[in-house]
Amino acid sequence: MRACFWHPTQNELVHFDPATVFDESEFDAGRFRARLGLLEGNFFPSQKEIRRALVPLKRKRIRRALRKVEIYVSAVVDRSRFKEMGFVRAYDYRDEPRQELIPIQKMEVSDVYVFLGSNWSHQEVQEFGMRHSESGGSVVQMIYDLIPYLGAEYCSASHIVQFESFLTRATTYANQFICISEWTKKEFVEFLKSRGINRLVKTVPLAHEFDGFSRNEMAVQPESKAVAALEGKEFVLCVGTLERRKNGATLLRAWAELVARRGRVPLLVFAGKPGRSFDEFNEFLEAIPLLQNKVVIIPSPSDRDLAFMYQTSRFSIYPSLYEGWGLPVGEAAWFGKYVIASNATSLPEVCGDLIDYIDPNDADDILKKIEYALDNPDYVSRKEELIRGSKLRTWDEVADSLLNVIDPSC
Image 1 (tube, rainbow, N blue to C red):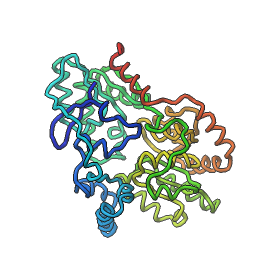
Image 2 (cartoon, helix red, strand yellow):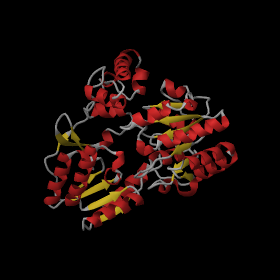
Image 3 (spheres, helix red, strand yellow):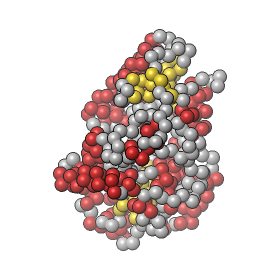
Image 4 (tube, one colour):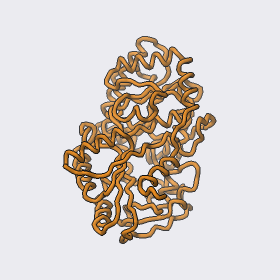
């Protein structure tokens, strides 16, 4: 088995032995990128990375200029802050050995080519899959969600066009599809039927496991100063990109009412990068005086930071409007923590009746469930006892399921 990807600087499809790269218990994105020759620059991030980081401030020229200065200064004098902003210094991985990458010209007809990534944005990879299919080879395509197709209000126009093109093309080369939830499978099968297409579609649910950390582990120390500052404080955690689909604004509305009613409340901590509709979220937050000093944003937490926050939070809340699965729900459960999750789309599949649910469009319902959890710690403890004792899914089990679907003889 080989791992394949489109190398952006070599401008070709390459493959490598994944066992020689994923050889550590705790994933390090910088080391991974360095080994594959994907880490650009030296001390400073590439211009592309900086532009991406500044997107949430595109309408705020002064703050944008100040953030750009902060990026360059922290790259030199404050590595912790640099990392908190989501950057990796190539210089820190300068001695990392390079992985051997072998260009792929063609595959044997007996080979099964499995698309596990977001290849909807890489036309060259799709074309390779099409050539393999046309030569008689088998191609399996994983579908994570149909959000750009069915939830167009959450995506850019270019994203929508690109994704719809991918969906159409995928049906011409894939012999089989794998979806990550029954919800996604239902939506994808409906898409196929609308085009008069019949294909084999199976479901392989994702894992609850937070890779690199033991089940119910409670002894992790944070990496960043911002997360370390939460130690000893009461807070409720919401993990996910800060964008419209994740529904942070409705959660803020509920939290403002909570503050108005009670005065003293835990902090509300958002852990995730700003998305394309971050301006809406940020402007909403700044417009509510009651929420000042009540909300903390951790924009680029490391895995260790996230593990610490999952463990030490009162509980997690996940009010998303649309998901293909919902990793943060399962990850919180992996650490034995209570979760209040949206009842939308795939989310009830992740933890079933182990956790409680909200209507993500109803701020009053969100407020009611939060207050109940805060006022009834014994109830939360009982739910957490059930979570800690329940069977949760590991990534090894996901891999085994994938292999069984792709090749039942394995």
